[in-house]
Length: 214
Ligand code: AP5
Image 1 (cartoon, helix red, strand yellow):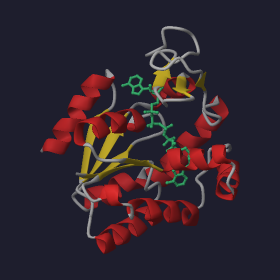
Image 2: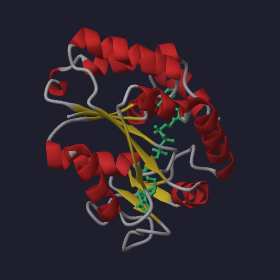
Image 3: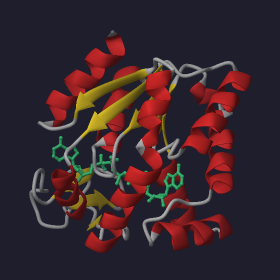
């Protein structure tokens, strides 16, 4: 299965992608995760990316396209992949199409997870992630048993730097102006399916799996 997950910041792309990895045994390729790793490793790419991410802006196309090209070329993508957070604008989508055709592994489906804007802010301000195992929590919807501590491994939880309210609002604006046009892009190609991302994580996962199975 070769899938692009579309959706606003906080729509639950990462949450659903992690469940898909378990079910289908294919890798999640998240440009956000790759960039955050570069930031925490202190690489020059990470330093460049951080200045954009902290403002809620998109990192320049040439940077993320290079990262994606390298990642898609790895062996584990041969049996399929879940793209999460890429593409983010029409230029990235067009480049991706060319890249995947060259690699002989074109997309099967673009799946949009739709969540009302008023819910997104609460999901993002409430998000907490484990420093060690990356398990995700939400202080409003799925809090850990002990405040600030991961239920699974006992490590500390952190809040992403770009999950501050002002930065979230900027990310949502960027999504509407630059990423939302991709809905039409994939619709015109006959590759788009949309599901509601409101409800429990399990309910949404059932809808995701049903959309993939059709
Ligand atoms: P990125 O990391 O891609 O962030 P994003 O798209 O803003 O998406 P998020 O990770 O915030 O949300 P999500 O949809 O994955 O939601 P999640 O599952 O975590 O990008 C970050 C930055 O990197 C960008 O701003 C940009 O600067 C840069 N970047 C990345 N890719 C780029 C690209 N291609 N080009 C240029 N720049 C790029 O869930 C959110 C919260 O909600 C969690 O707490 C979760 O527990 C909770 N939740 C999930 N589902 C539910 C539910 N059903 N009910 C209640 N709560 C739920």
